[in-house]
Every structure is written in structure tokens, then in C-alpha cells.
Length: 98
Image 1 (tube, one colour):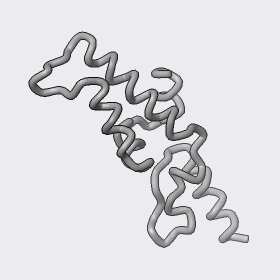
Image 2 (tube, one colour; image 1 turned 60 degrees about the vertical axis):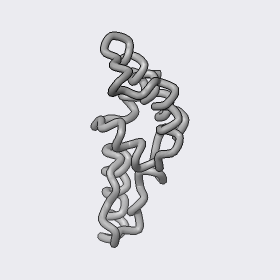
Image 3 (cartoon, rainbow, N blue to C red; image 1 turned 90 degrees about the horizontal axis):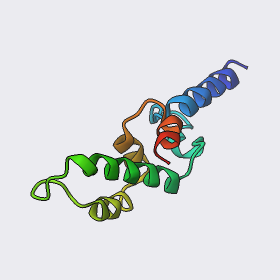
Image 4 (cartoon, helix red, strand yellow; image 1 turned 180 degrees about the vertical axis):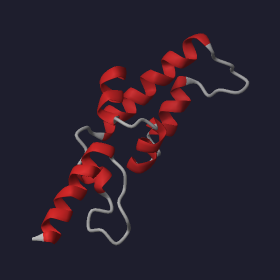
């Protein structure tokens, strides 16, 4: 019973923070198993945020174009996309930028 409770609590933690658990956990890839959003939604939100940031502060000598950024986003793993968003609440991030 205690093991089932621990697994349930880990899944809730994972769902709310989207953080990978320890490698010994069965839920070590929880950020992909319990996501309430999909990969394309996260890529779209990251792209829209980047477009917004580039609107007023774009330096072509340093920054990649929005198209180059989108191309780079499509090459990232799910975990790397979550890290790129670097937001505590990914669902809220997606809602704000979609």
C-alpha cells in the first residue's frame, strides 16, 4: 500500500512540475508520460515568445531569426523543450503564449 501511495504522489508531483524523477523511479520519464500539453503546443508557445522578444530587441549579429529558432526547437527532445521554457508552470506558459 505504501508503494502505491508513493507512486501516486510521485505522479502528482511530476504532473505539477514536469520534472524527471530519480533514475531508479519507474516514472523517470514522467515529463513525457504525464504532460497535459503536447510537443507541438510547447514548440508553438516557445516560438511565439521568441517572436515577441525579437520584435523590440533583435540583433542580427547575435540572435538567430525566428525561423532559425523554430528549426532549432524542432530538433530538441521533449526534456530539452521543457528546459527551454524554463517555467515552473508549463501549462500556464503555453496558455500565455498560444
